[in-house]
Amino acid sequence: MIEVRNLVKVYRSKKKEIVGVNNVSLSVKAGEIYGIIGYSGAGKSSLLRCLNLLEKPTSGEVEIDGVNLPSLKGEDLRKARLKIGMIFQHFHLVSSKTVYENIAFALKAAGKSKDEAEKRVLELLDLVGLADKKEQYPAQLSGGQKQRVGIARALANNPKVLLCDEATSALDPSTTKSILNLLKDINRKLGLTIVLITHEMEVVKEICHKVAVMQNGEVIEEGGVYDIFSNPQEPLTKDFINSILQFELPQQLIQNRKGKIIRIQFKGEIAEESVVSELFQKYKVKGNILHGKIEYIQEIPLGIFIMELTGEDSEVERAIEYITEKTRSLEVVHDVA
Amino acid sequence: MMSLDSLVQLLPDLNKAFFQTLYMVGISLAVAIIIGLPLGVLLFVTDKGLFLENSAVKSITGWIVNLIRSIPYIILLVALLPLTDLLTGTTIGPTAASVSLSVAAIPFFARMVETSLREIDKGVIESSVAVGATSWMIIKDVLLPEAKPGLIQGLTITTISLVGYSAMAGIVGGGGIGDLAIRFGYYRYDNTVMITTVVVLILLVQIIQLAGDRISKLVDKR
Image (cartoon, rainbow over the protein chains, first blue to last red):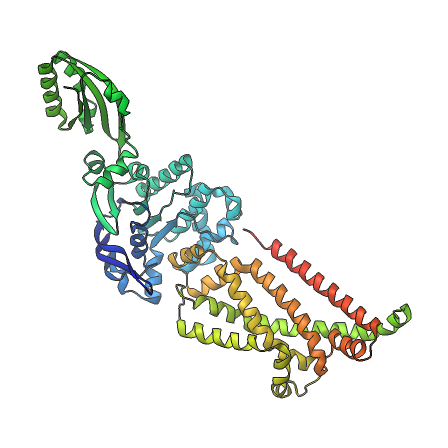
């Protein structure tokens, strides 16, 4: 659905050049929710804005649904944009227009008649759950409601792609969740392809199928969300994941331990198996769970436990071997011996 | 000295002058809206980073606007006398004065328009571009409605400036309250006329400002 090839965006000012996006290539399949994560200044916003040509790429190709966007100009570009919805961190609704008029504006852009527009606006208001707010002005709405209007406006002309520019960053956690659920919903119902940028790994975890991590204008790591979560490669990716799966043990706690401290990660089905209880049956070791968590990422469990194992050295060794074999992911965090 | 008698005597003249002022200000305000508004929009949308970016149009328009604005009104008034004669067939009276007032009002209001458009959140303009709206739609349905409170404020300031300018038009026999003040009050040392006209002008300006503030607040949906 979306093909980005060797995209470069350079910002030129009188004195210097700043590279916003540095040779990024990525591909998003139809119906996918694709997340781009990075800290501010990583170039993710520039990349997103190059997708609907709010910013003109310096070089490279952006192909959406078979159309090479940078080659379009004027009226052709405008028509192409009708099929690419976009929502924003600060919603960007027209404050002098009612909810109804804000959404109808998008339909007017597509040349729809008043009657057609009315029918569609009511449909959209139903979809985003704001049917009772149509005569209100944006200033009378909460952040979450404003974003729902933004979503309705973006979906007005049945776009194939929805671009989300930090769409939940200005919202509180519970509102964020409801907006993410709405996005997930429309992704499923309408088969809409969604590209979102965020600096919150939580958002990626909640709804994305694939994720790209950006740093200094480049994509440094990319893959399925579960794979990235269970096996991150780059330090920055690990940072982002740690923000959710926090497993830093207090140093003091580690100091006072007598046995080996291990970190075990259970992936997928194995997280549901009773590896740990079997361990205690098979070997003469005692286990003490210091920390643990199971996260469900796209409904697949990912469990992480930090345990202290005590017992005879040889038994502990064999126990560790056993778990390593079972989980393929064991790390000795601290060893007293 | 100021007396009730001379005030009563003055009333017919004052009444006539008052309506002449309204007439001059009204005409030039209308011209300012018809020409200055589009000019202000043009100054804004051709600016860097906007959807009709065009540095040539922007700088030429900006230069002309600055040129007219830098000429003191009193000089503009005299310099435009040939044009006034051409357009109205006379160089005295309120209709004639309206010509130079209009010329002064156009760039003044155009800058006011530009300034109030600048206050619109750029993101709102951008979201309209992203939605696929035409330039005309963005101007008509987004820029002007969003800037409405500011535009009304700008119109208020322009109106008040025009009231002030129109008083200067009295110097070349333009008519209006200013003319009355200059001819009777200033040249004949008639304090009654002088003070009365000044009071009328003060009241007029206060009313315009008050009305402008009210309306601007009323249309503000932010």
